[in-house]
Length: 382
Image 1 (tube, rainbow, N blue to C red):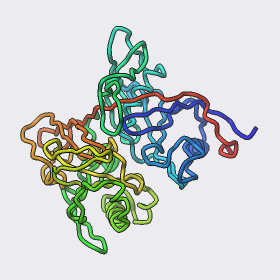
Image 2: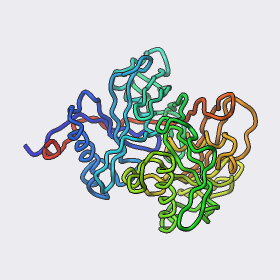
Image 3: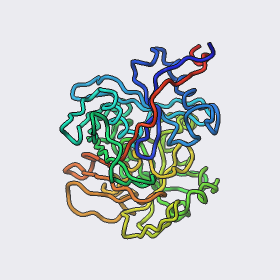
Image 4: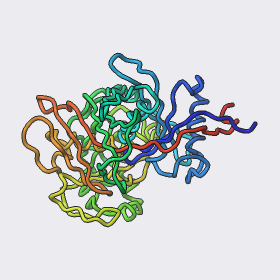
């Protein structure tokens, strides 16, 4: 026997796709579990042709779900970013897009009962990566998570049932504070000194102004991705900020963890063309942004990045706050973030002193794609 099998479910959540496992189905040996993840996705080839990835960061993901470990939660959720053409299983960050699919999985797998006379059920999830509670409103139909609906989200053609995800007290999950270096921090590369903001909201992000990098921030990804000097500069900023924030002791150590902190660029509201050729007008957005994930420009924008960018836009003094359309008043705000595939609305509320984040939220769609036996080469078990 050259292979063995393990039960696996594939879900799309938002603009990400991942392999989902029940923790009880996985072996107790962490090294074997890592090899299962790398083989299942295929971290060994750039195309990931020998597994279920597709050579992009937003499809090279694994989620593990288990019985809740804390009171008040229905399930635990642990996320792993899997390497592309490198043997990496990184559980230091999380995935905001797949959170919607976690809610669907909890219902579909029977962790949470779906009342037959209700149109949705609230699922409480403990995200072990960031040690925060997620509240997910899951649409239901016939005892399962509903798939079809009339909600359209950027980055996907067609519509689906709307999942509403909220994260309570999302700041400081990885480094202990939302703004460990203050609202702005100066960082120098061999080329220039930049004023950036480092925020830890859902995932740690470094945010830098597009104009400081000599770009508009509205360039098509297929064009800006050819700018090797820009990619190198952004990664230099990212790894140096990892050290400055205490996430890594050295630049070399930071380079060994490519998934976090992530880095994004922000620009003022302006007209731009999406990757699909649609015109977005300046008055339709509160800011324009792009982000990198695993060293490449993200096709859309990671859910965790949308949360972080939206929250930062409201905190006085941050780089996004300077470039975003001004918002006045307390309470919940809807921040419209223009990204390469369109516009996404993020719900954000600050604490009473306007210095931290009370909660963030976003609407997504999700779909179970397949459930079955995932075959793993036997050598991955040795």
